[in-house]
Image 1 (spheres, rainbow, N blue to C red):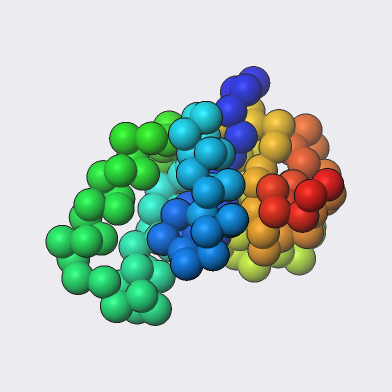
Image 2 (cartoon, rainbow, N blue to C red):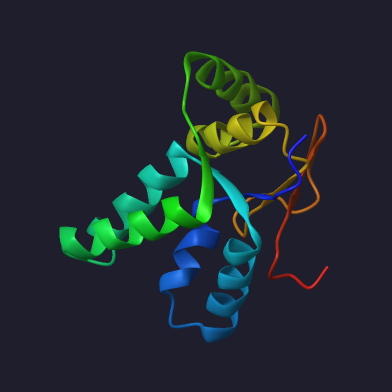
Length: 134
C-alpha cells in the first residue's frame, strides 16, 4: 500500500485558484507528497486550456511542476477495465471511475476529492474531501 494520498484533478486545480485558503491547502497536500494518474494530468490540461484559457507555455509549466511534485501512475487496460466495473457498480462518472481505479490499483487507501462522495468506501479506498474539515 502507498502511504501518500491519491488526489483528484480538482485538488490539483486549486493550485491555480484565487481561493487562497483552498490553494494553500492544495499546495500543502501536493508538497507533502501525493499520487495522481495520467487521467488527472489529462483533466488538468483540459481545464487549463478550455476553461482557464491558458496558453500552452503556461500549461506546460503547470504540468511539469505537477509531475515533479507527484508520483504519476499510468492508465492501462487493467485500469480501464476496473474503471468500467467501478462506474457500473457505484454509478460514478466514467472519468471519476478512472481516477478511483488507478487509486485502487496503486494501493492507495485515501482519495482526496472535492467532487466525489466524501466518506464513500470502495474496497480499501475511502474518498475524503480535504476542504470539508472532517
